Amino acid sequence: MANHETPRTPDEGTSPVIPRHVAIIMDGNNRWAKRRGVSGPMGHRAGVEAVRGVLRACKHHGVEVLTLFAFSSENWGRPLPEVRALLALLSRYLRNEVRELHKDGIRIRFIGERCRFSRRQLKLMEQSEALTRDNTGATVVIAVDYGGQWDIAQATRRLARQVLEGALQPQDITPELIDRNISISDLPRPDLCIRTGGDARISNFMLWHFAYTELYFTDTLWPDFTEIEFARALDEYSQRERRFGLREPDGIVAVGEMNA
Image (cartoon, rainbow, N blue to C red; front, side, top):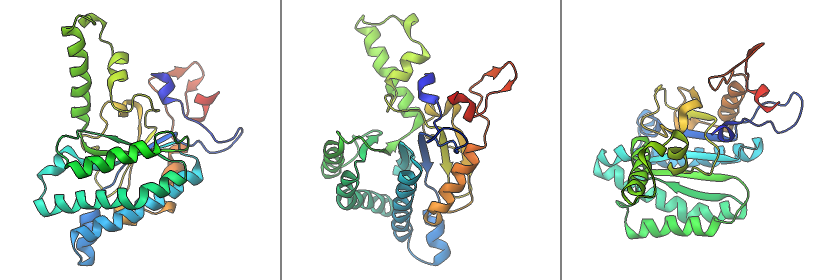
């Protein structure tokens, strides 16, 4: 799995270390709306503007993969009007934004359970993936009806079926084999996870993937998370020491040293 976790610099020398993959828990839309005396859906719509800004920032800084926690497995338990508003906003985003992302060479991927979405929503997701499948620029992964525990469970179910079919022995199941069956196993593991809104937890997001991910928490509510805020998170990341459980004889392996 080491190839998933190698940081990258855009240039040789003293250039800042840029994470290949940034994951974001976009929290704070409802509080943003409440503070302004507007409806919750207006907060979520303001959050879409923040997504646009972060996409621009990723392009500017050279981030290869951006994963957005758009709708968790637990979000189905929210009040029905809010769930409907969130799903309508997702559909509107896909209808309005994907063609522009396609023009920019961005590939769209979805992770999560899909059985609870409507046929219309599933069609929009499938069309978005199909349209952008061959793009070779950045990748945007949208996590919808996603939970880290679900992800690990679906990977182990795949392996259990192979055991039942006689294609795999239980003793052959390794972390590397589970890793190959987890969502987006073909992409670099997240180097950095940003959570907005002030809470310092990962809320069942990408539990397997985050084994060595750097975590960055900010009190900034998601609609207020600007390109400047994103750059600030990248700057702090570049100063972190990423050990990956290792030490070199002369000291700790720092982020930039992993490229040597």
